[in-house]
Amino acid sequence: MAPVVNVTGGLARGTRRDGVDAFLGLPYAAPAVGADRYRLPQPVVPWEVERDAGVHGPSAAQTAYPSPMDQFLPASVAPGDEYLNVSVWAPSEGGTDLSVMVWIHGGAFVRGANSVATYDGSAFARDGVVLVSVNYRLGAPGFAVLDGAPTNLGLRDQVAALRWVRDNVAAFGGNPEDVTVFGESAGGMSVATLMASPAAGGLFHRAIVQSGGGTAVCALEDARRVGVELAAILGVPATAEAFAALDPEAVAAAQGALTLAVQADPDPARWGSSVLRGGLGIMSLFPVVDGDVVPEVPATRIAAGSAAGVPLLIGTTTEEMRLFMVPTGVAATISEPALPFLAARYGWPEHAVETYVRNRPEASAGDVAAAILTDAGFRVPTAQLAAAQHGVGAPVHVYEFAWRTPLADLGACHALELPFVFDTLGAGALMAGGAAPQPVADAMHRAWVEFAKGGDPGWPSWAPDEPLVRTFGASPEEPSSDVSAVKVSTWPRQDELALWG
Image (cartoon, rainbow, N blue to C red; front, top):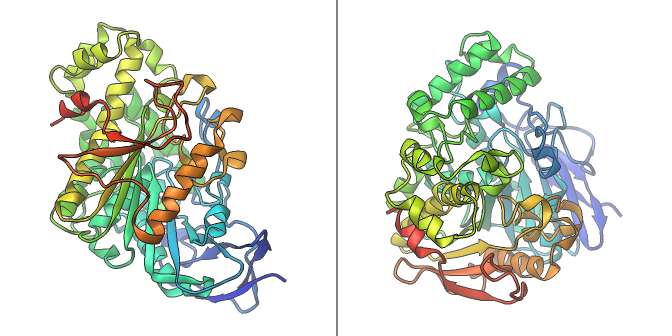
């Protein structure tokens, strides 16, 4: 018999399979279309007849990944009006007071959706957790600074979704007082920002930040510059009214042109704080310090105690930047003489080039640059956020994902850990191929579940004077090691991390 729940808006009928109930595409806000695309999220529009929640809902307006990234990252383009939706997976046997996990997807704030097969929440429900996966406004509707539009609408959507969870998750057996919010890349940055946001206070109780950090925000005036550039590409004023009159697909296409412009000329003098990831210009639209939802740089507020008492699990992959630099050919274009020029242009620390080269005597210049940019864009912000949260007395656990895929020389790259966390190697392992080790997925998924249920993922907590890190999978330095072995040690490559202050 198909399960039915009563949620904000009305009754919804899901599906039941192998002990897991799934309710897909449930709206947590009214359709944000037309002028409402650039307005605050509005209450759910009630429905009168029982709603079919057996298939995923639409995604926010976006374009598919361009080549060659489309070989490694799944498409999530599904047009439709009700894209402000959540999908929920829960144990069929029901129960009460189950731990809840709320997933915020990545995609550089311009792509992604809860419908991606990698994010199927069945394994979490199988293990006694209610998993809620959130869609939110992306690109210009979510993060552009435009006259007449509220700032950070994508974050405001996430807060609205968390309020929906608070009000509705008990219908699925979940405990609204036991919520862990987690995300990767843009989703991880979102989690860090929510930790610092007064609007999200009390809506979650634990946090997991995967390949994100607490510094991924843009100054208001810099973001306004980006909005003006985007408006120029579209040939309209940088106003909410003008953007709302455009075809959302045209806006999404223009965002791609904007990203190419940033990548072609990633000069901080032109773009200010609107360029992330060490000058490569990977993102051009993302959260802005607005004095409201984001009062200041999240790491600063977190260090002052904005998320005091919230246990944090945080980490990165070992070779994050290889995803962005190897398939695109960027790494191959970097020569050894170019490294000092890159260091000067993008403000890498003194002695960074010689230290990273010395530690990788067989590596190409492109590989060295990828290692430096991995630390600049991911590991250093991770260390800073870990220190900030530890400093206010919250327990912090740090991990590193080190298993190297044999596919396309990607190594232990960005986003590779996702199907391991969700235990969806069969459905969502485009980058891992057929070699993905199930024992690593078993260990990583179990750690996330245990953290959500009690705040302890299974290894000692991190501290600045004892920076213990749990490594998942064989490390690049130990390719023959047992991938299923539990390895907890001092944060590797400490000499490199120390260069960044």
